[in-house]
Length: 474
Ligand code: SAM
Ligand code: SF4
Figure (cartoon, rainbow, N blue to C red):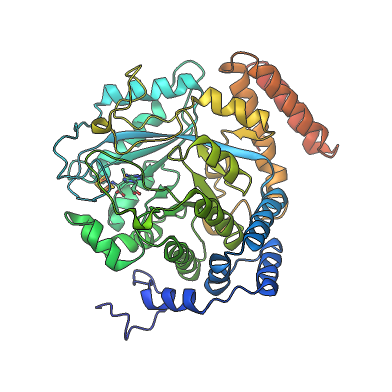
């Protein structure tokens, strides 16, 4: 079917395009942010109800500083009510940067001849994972360029290799992937290898902008990319992550595009994405980009607060692309996952003392803190760092489960599991006083829990962790 927004009635069916520029533009134009309406919408979200595109557009158009503050306050409140204090930590691992595509913003694009190209060998992959385990990492996202070499079998093989690496007390318990869209059979192959989340970003939901930035290779095809998560679902992957690269087009449009994508997945598969990512464009090797759509810090933090309110039950991922100060602000709005100790150069974890070299990495990152530093700061700010991987290992994924939507779930599972995985980290990897501070925080959280048999069980398990048992979870 040829997509024509002039005549095509948007309805949600598997594999069919669902983004209409006209619909999004009309919604943005029509949204009038009166004070009463903004209050009503924030109240709806605090009632843990998903916002419609129209309601989200009202928040997007609310630029009055007082209303912006109220939106941010609403996001903070929702975070406290729904999310608790745990922040899940992960690290990206770049497996290969060969790429046939020509995304104008990316250092890995095919036309960038000064980029150093590498694919980790089996041995190199193991060494990188060993270094990550030595830091205390338990959750990785493997990242790949798009290239005939990176077949589903290749990806599956790297995933299985990572799971097998065990160094000291270290192990990787969840491997997610960020890879180019596959066909249904390809998705089945990577699912069988035991991936956690499959993540792919649409980059921009606007077709016109998309065609300007994607000038070569398979990725030129907007429809193939936008239907990727439909194919993933058809293949049985019910844990998927969406995202947009902010800075390619109007951020207001992208926010509605993301919400439209959530709506589509919920309408067709009865399950929304597990996570939304919202990277901002960063400097990359030989990349010049249009300053027109660059998202300011003020708009960015406002945007995260709006997303939080719009989809109260979806995990939000913030990456090391952002400077520490921005990360610290948006953590208050319910970002549920961050990366720590990130290196995005190829072989970045094993090749010590690398200075940042734009020709060896995809783009530049702004937060160079080590995992230990990130954890220390989280603890100091009263957040519980978590390496929990319990849900996907106990089958709590997809339609049957979304941690934020089941009342009491965070309290019953996520917070105790955060404490257990944090205790493991404190025992095995913490240095310079972090262990004492970490246990004080665990004690404080325990003191806030009701004295029931769950708490008794948790205390018993924490003692077992101290005695050397590992991988205990609820
Ligand atoms: N090659 C696959 C793809 O394009 O989907 C997956 C890996 S790609 C390395 C991961 C993501 O990096 C892209 O989806 C894009 O959003 C992001 N990215 C690319 N260039 C960037 C830049 N200059 N600044 C920030 N993020 C960037
Ligand atoms: Fe290749 Fe992905 Fe970079 Fe595009 S964003 S050039 S597909 S690695």
